[in-house]
Image 1: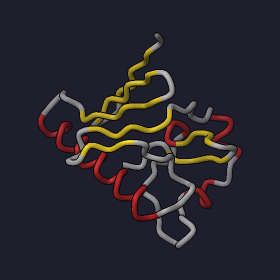
Image 2: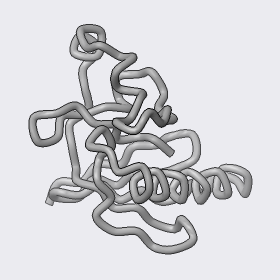
Image 3: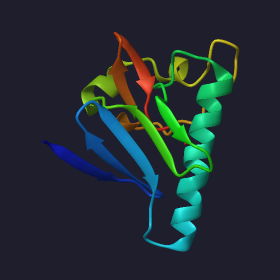
Image 4: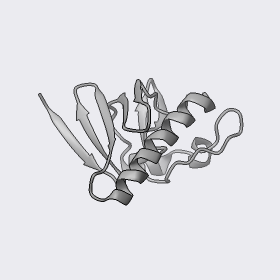
Length: 119
């Protein structure tokens, strides 16, 4: 079993088999709350925006405790620099998506580039 743990500013991402499990950080009360809000925001954007530009959330625990997404390989710096960034931040219905402009915010999924960190 290969596992990997990524640390963001407000969440930990545990990589298991085909899945990425996002949980709030326990480093401080503030980062824990920001992690809860980030998971809730990701879920709400995925659920209500309905765009193929967001990595799907396979499972969500209410209250922002856990998001599960497919495990994907994020873009390299070279890949990120070659893509047309402005098109990645606007959904099909014109909603601006809250995605940081950095390579590890995006990945390949079903032959498309999707946001994997939009919380």
